[in-house]
Image (cartoon, rainbow, N blue to C red):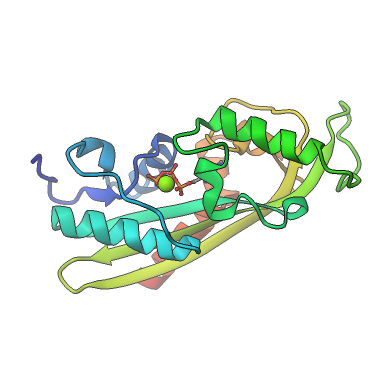
Length: 212
Ligand SMILES: O=c1nc[nH]c2c1ncn2[C@H]1C[C@H](O)[C@@H](COP(=O)(O)OP(=O)(O)OP(=O)(O)O)O1
Ligand SMILES: [Mg+2]
């Protein structure tokens, strides 16, 4: 099994979008990251939790114990008001196990457009509708296999699900997530801008505070 060099931070994820965001954030602190994509021999980690925090702890512990290093895990997702909080912890598999981001985005638009409900806000100047209020949530868990202890944090960001995608940055539901406070879509932001406003950036800032 390939080892992990001294000082490299292990992110217990296979999501390349998350890896890029953590690489950006830790890069500013002079650190590099590794991910579970660097350890293909490890089995997939099941996500049976009913909360983001629970899944983050499971991913951090499984990876940290398997590799014998401190591991940082991220469990995150989208809560959509008009869908009663769905897809929530099921965000990655909303359109089915192994679904691509594009499948999940298509299903989200299908579900929202099928609702009899009125739009959540006035349309954007180009006519794009704002179908529902929504919130991104990110739970982080940092696990140390030497002590069995966790340090945990959570972050959120509020916005709206738009009827049409915009932007080519980020990943997941970013092209559908409109930020009223910026008047832009999450997928239109640079990595730096996304870190400054996102659920993941907020959770990471809180974790750093806890670490002192
Ligand atoms: O900043 C974000 N911008 C857009 N979408 C996002 C974001 N953050 C989470 N999401 C969506 C993607 C995925 O549908 C789900 C995460 O699911 P989640 O299980 O935490 O991650 P994953 O399965 O992709 O990778 P892994 O479990 O290996 O960390 O929420
Ligand atoms: Mg996952």
